[in-house]
Amino acid sequence: MPDHLHLLVTGTTGTSDLQRFAKLAKQRSAFTYSHAKRRRLWQASYYDHVLRPEESSLSFIHYMFQNPVRAGLVEQWIDYPYLGSETMSLREIECALDEAGAASWGP
Image 1 (cartoon, helix red, strand yellow):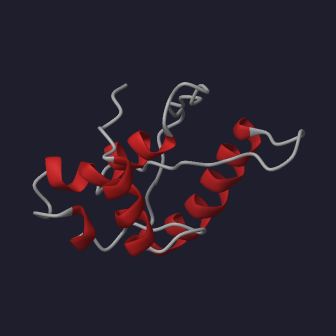
Image 2 (cartoon, one colour):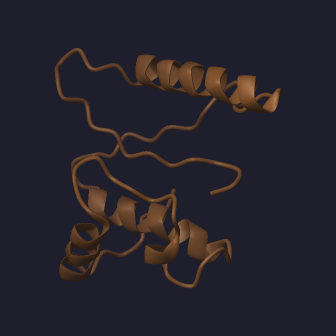
Image 3 (cartoon, rainbow, N blue to C red):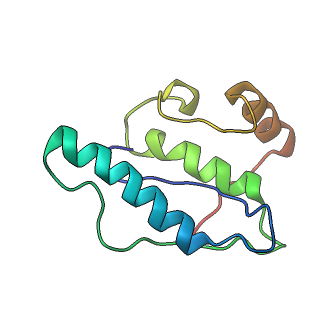
């Protein structure tokens, strides 16, 4: 999205720290961006939501991937060039969403 970012991150150890992750990610990306564009990249804070056991990660993925469609940037989420995953291809995500019949998560 041109004006915001959605991430689904999973802690892999008992010492995983979302606040530290967000701080470092914002610092590192802002440093590179500010040198190239000479302006700020991020606002001071961020919104987070911890998925509870009864909440489906596939529903949240569906919500994230539908954002560019809702914004009118593309007709189908698969056409948006800035979607991706470190663990699954977009086709694998598409198949998982189709199999699950994932309804969109709502904040």
